[in-house]
Length: 209
Image (tube, one colour):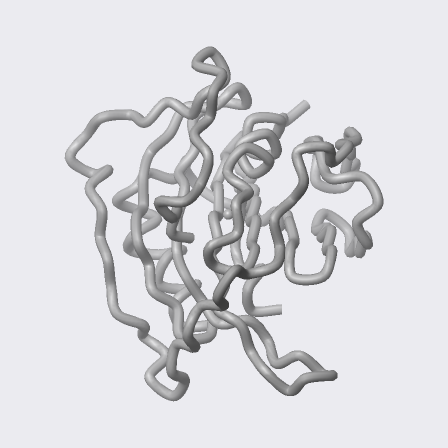
C-alpha cells in the first residue's frame, strides 16, 4: 500500500499527540544544519490531498500489548503490536490493523543515511510513489538501535475497497544502516490519531543482530 512506503522506522506529528513522558527513552534529535524542517508540496500532482478525518479512528490504545518479532532474512528485530495481521516476504514484513500499520523493508546500501542524503533520495522516492505526499521533516536522530534518519510526512491512503474512499494518513519512516544494509521502518495511521508513544516504542525497539 502507498501509505506503507518506506525504508524504515516511518508524518507530521500533530499538536494533539501525547508527549513522551519517559525522558530516558526519548528520541534524541542530533543538532545539525541538515536537520531543519523541509515542508514540500506533493510531487504527485495527479492526486489531491484528501481532508483529514474529524475525530479520526486509529488511536492505538495504551493497553495495547506488544510482542518481539525477529526477521531472520533481514537480520533485525523489533517490538510490534500483538494481534495485528502479519504479511511477510523475505526481509520485508508488515503488520496492519484497520487504518494503522507498521512495515519494515531492507535493501542494500553503500553508506549510512544522513538527513541530507535522505532528503535528496528516499524522501523524493516516497513523494513520487505515494498519494499526494507532503514531506514535513527529515531529521537525524539517535535511538537505542543506533543513529537513524526519520522522515515525517502526510499522504493519502489507498482506496478502501468497501467504501471506495481514501483517508489522509500521517507517516513516519525511520532509516537504519548496518554493514551494507538499510532498513526502512514505517508506521502510519489516520492523520490526527494519537499514537506517538506506541510509534516511539517500535522505533526505539529496532535492533540489528
